[in-house]
Amino acid sequence: MIALIGARSGSERVPNKNVRPLAGHPLLAYAITTARKAGVFERVVVSTDSEEIAEIARWYEAEVPLLRPPEYATATSPDIEWISYTLERLPATYDLFAIVRATNPFRGPDTVRRGLDQLLDTPEADSLRAVERVKQHPGKMWLLSEGGRTMTPLLDQSHLDAAWHAGQYQALPPVYVQNSALEIAWTRVVSETGTREGRVLCPFLTKGLEGFNVDDEDDWARAEALVAGGHASLPEIERPPYPYPPLP
Image (cartoon, rainbow, N blue to C red):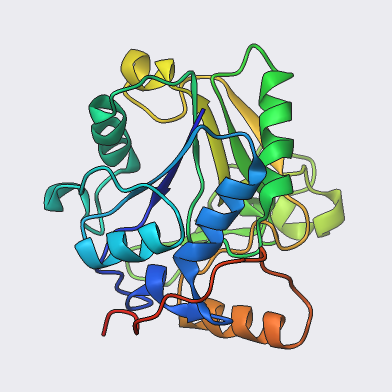
């Protein structure tokens, strides 16, 4: 089994997000540490288009066997491109791969082990993906008309005795949204389906802050506040911090 950690350069909403320091270490370091301490991976590989990020990844004892082509590192590049590119060029083959994203600092090794156990206990599944119950239910979402003068429900509710948008949250059917805490899949799905997840997905329900994802500056500020206030813990990194300042 192999861990794949994507860390492209050029983050727009949080500049240099993957190597920006959180509690003294680059964000990327917590994903590498999580994967290494999970104790289930033969290799921990970082995929990046940047030699500077590669140097930081190696400092924290991840492998960077090759750099990702620039066309697979844009803001709109689908993950399957760099995943396929990496798996196809590694000398060994693996039954399973996990995507351990750098942007989830509060997900630790136990999360990975729990997810792997769940997937192995679900033989009919091609993959496992982290999800959490939505806070903003799609039954209460609306689409505005072209002029913005009227609106209609996002979901057709004409068949219901009582519309979801008129009810209480607790009475609505549970709906789950994916977060980026963890994905594990059988490598065969990449070649067989051209996707990273296949056709049958197993839901992995995250707990607490496991699914917290740094997407923008507000998320970053919240992450810093959670750590500073002792409300969240980061995977313990036993190496000293990377000795050079992160990318400008």
